Image 1 (tube, rainbow over the protein chains, first blue to last red):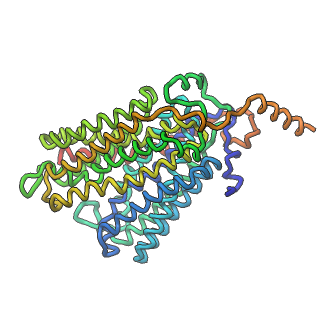
Image 2 (cartoon, one colour; image 1 turned 30 degrees about the vertical axis):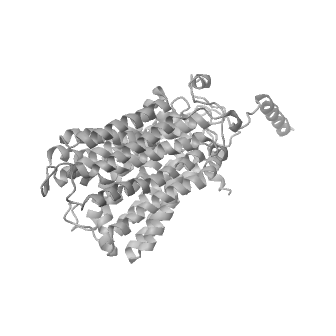
Image 3 (cartoon, rainbow over the protein chains, first blue to last red; image 1 turned 90 degrees about the vertical axis):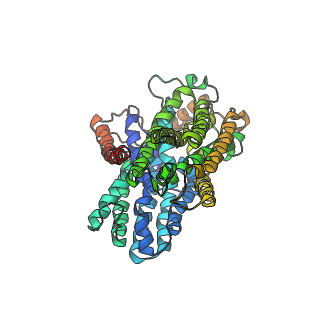
Length: 473
Length: 49
């Protein structure tokens, strides 16, 4: 599929002297926008009232979006790598924005299917394309610090939720003055429709700014003082390239898929239940030692650690190595989960500290995986390979809540659960992390038969000379 | 834009204005700082609420 010339990859190849520090803001402009996907709980109750339906029916909107994220990232990954980040960011901006606009129409006219199609399907496609494109671009611009690069972009995804939650509350309060953002009031359907309209337009402008300033490095570009041979000296890191089609035939891809699936499933188990979980852990009779406002504060703490973990752990992986840092995420994660299940209810601060570190590992796992892929498969089609790997996220998005909810359903009714009721779910997560830990241990360098043929520099020079001669003639 | 690159054949050296980099970082930094501030405010209720 060809793209208009102003979006073409060839048009955005940076000339010598271009400053690569212009690329992180381009990536952040996209990820801060699509990170809104994690802020849907702000208007959930309003949508339940607007459509007179169940929380499950509204929750499906988010599930569709996450499934579409994985599917579109997998399906369009090769297209993204071939056509470059400007075409991808532009396309993501259009899908993400139109998703909001169609969703707004659905809310305004009372048609839930339009919201499923708009935000869920169209928005989900925007999510998938928007997620992978800035990441693979940053990896190419920062071959000396790939963990830092992917951490910066994917931190933006966590940051997007931090922005969208309070912003949405303020905008809904502006459109519906009777809504003040407290638990007792619910914004009207028209306020949510206007919120979607506003967000759709604001995100379009913001993401297009990213598409405008993004550039790709020339094939022969290297950062000052960077010697690729120093990278090769690290175990597991290759200077060869593997295509996306070949990558999925290697055991390394599926081992990493398992690692990501296990890490994300375990993290989602806590994130999904954060507010009720802390109250249940400190329940005394009918009440809880932790008030609803404090529980909301706990969710805020987790959001901060989720975002911070993405940047800090991923950057640290540049020094420790990708395999060792996943041994920490998964191995220390197991210990922390066991501690949460056994001593988590002894004091609030113990519970908060354990959960916060676990969630920082959850974020770190997301942010480090593209750098791990780059180490194993090279930069050639790392976006497309990353896209295929994100199906693990979609699967975890279904498995995580399913495990926790089914365990809790079997233990009692919400509002009456106590710490002990969470133990089976927490120990299932320990088992999952153990599976991920073993999968990570089994990762070895990719067999050379999967490597793309290396370009012969001599023949490249001869071709360039011949082209120059033809031009001169 | 002076930082604009052209086709892959154009290898004329360029210079990215510092002001453009500062502007781009400010544009993404302000909403991020707003989000962080609001979330820290909410998170504090864990210790005070």
